[in-house]
Length: 463
Image (cartoon, rainbow, N blue to C red; front, side, top):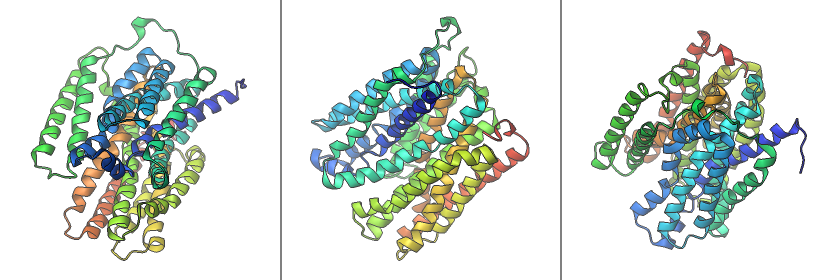
């Protein structure tokens, strides 16, 4: 197989995008068939929870360290190593004879994903060295992850209706194999740099950041079954706060910090990271809350519930195709603001949810607007998140951006469901949760508009 120099970056981008999408697809892979898995292995509720988070916790917790590995040892090298671990773990998970093996392999899938995601961003930076080309690539890249999430949800619901949940692992296995075969043909080799010029690993910072993020995420997940003031929630959240405080204190003193304090000093970048986080919050709000509503309130089957999300997925795909052109014409900041406003309007429509709301009138208009807004947010925010990032910090930037995106669903779901729990009526609580999400979007839109007027994002005004 040979490719022209002009075509190679486009093919490489497509391959990297499929890999990134499969990483998020793998998070949602077992969400729908969890009851079947629990029945097959005779799992207790605690076992189900651990299986549910076995992939996401190491993935989100290790992304910063994965970014440092990519910056030190090379994006392509870490990309390949991550793919091998991710693919091998998926093969074993597909044939897992027990719950323990399945949970362990989900954990190693997450570790592999934490190596792959920032490494892919480092490679992407080398594929498109021109800032304008890189900005356009990032505008497309931004919507890739949310497509993986919604497709994982939809496909798992359809597939597991007729065949075993184990076949869902065929997707990450196939993607990993294709990526490994094509890497040598499509991706540029890592540069041979003087070892003294490479960033050091900062093991203390890596341990503190990983432990802080994992404990914090676990504490937030536990809010689903326990009050915020309970021991299962309060202890990990307190430990997380202490560890992350120590982490930021340490980072200000070491020679090569895992996360340099100056990296988060750029208001444009911070706006992008918050935009990525809130876009992910919107995704989980739609998928999780409406799934509960359709199945528990309206009595829909899992298959019918899954099919109800097809318009949402279709709008995401179409808007993601159009978003790069909008970023190029109106700028990353304005595209993000527009997405926030459109999605906020859609969430506002969903606040009127009742037990008698029809799908076509009560649900679809709001979900379609949220899909359009989310896609615009992901595209614009991805460009803003990577603004002014030098090549030597591309892995770091990729790790930070993916961390923001992965923490969004965990933080958002804990907060939104806590808001919903303030209402005695379940459906009214869902409406309040959508209202809270709407408020978050409006606030960030105002903040982003102010930063844009002050010229903070002028350098990435047009991709």
